[in-house]
Length: 529
Image (cartoon, helix red, strand yellow):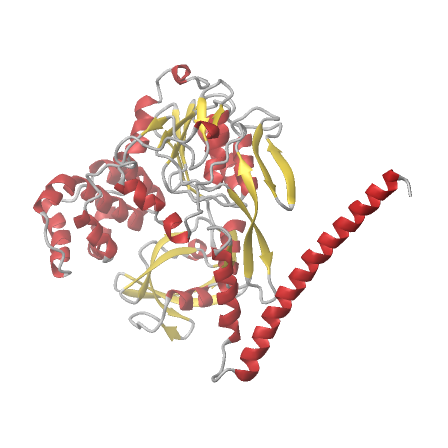
């Protein structure tokens, strides 16, 4: 046999043998688990909950792979899919359960509830013939299961408004889940957009917001991705379409079973000229890092804040037989310069989850970030600026956490739900008089202020919950706490817009962006227009 044919035959035999070994090993392991399952079924001393056994096995095995592969039971999978899809079918309210009563915090604009006259502050007493108010046996899921339902179906509810019980019949419809919290002008030339996730509806929401702000004269955009944990990769790419020139690489992905795939910008874009500032912090992850990484690598705008979370893994959803879902990491993603920004997870899940705490303890959140990646992780932006992989996106301008609000004293109020309790009770007592005195959001924003007696009621609430008064913390953080309470009161009376308009005043990252928006960005080697 000719030498050439001999080599080919040996290669085929070697490949076949390797394939057989891998297949055989796979079948052997599968049979081993099936044998275990059978032994439990026929020999275990007690009744076995096989659903729990299988779920536990899946969850535990995923923990040995990476921190972001996960298993979602059917109900959680459905809820998460709704969140990413950007819509669900229901009545269109945002609510909170307080003192065993559902209280309406917001009403979706144009939704079924708004159409029949449901208002912020209403308390839900009955759904159908069932009285829910004041009954602790009902949980949040009980409300959801009765209020949600197919589009076109009807649900009867009764709400308490002041001291009057009002009956409504609401026709369910498709309800959008907005990923955009607020889009507004800070001044005549500066727009601000706060994005909470990357969902199917995000590109359309952003497009509408950019058009609106541009028509109002926006020349500088502050895009706030703080605490945005990510979402759909395609939504991140679509967002970059608005800012980068066409045919620019946004991100590329690759994995063991998935060849390299590059994602580039399209021909369209609503804000490819003008100053761009992106805000990130330690909770900005995944799709937020794709956007901020691409903008940074192409020197399109300034990144301000603190180093992002550091998630560079891509998950693909697989639906299982019972409609549960496996979100399996299938690829890694890389920024245009080639940065892989996933932080290490070789020390286990517990250490990985504690990494943010370690940043705080080491002073990386309150002083300049001390992370110094090795030169092997160094890449260069389009303008030859040095950037690094291995642990998130490092901002161009670092802003520490404001420690004046991060006292143990204040966090005790948060942990015990007292901020929510105080603002809910305050709104119950004062909503009518506040609306009479401050009929518009702007009136409330510029004129309302908690007086010392009202603030003392909040502190007394802490006393009753056995939170020891900390005079030093109150002196240091008092005004900040008052602003947070005002923001929550505003949300409960006027809606989400009021909350963010007020809270912006005490966010140090937003304030830093506002302070430098008129600077010449070219000194940072990023585009100035």
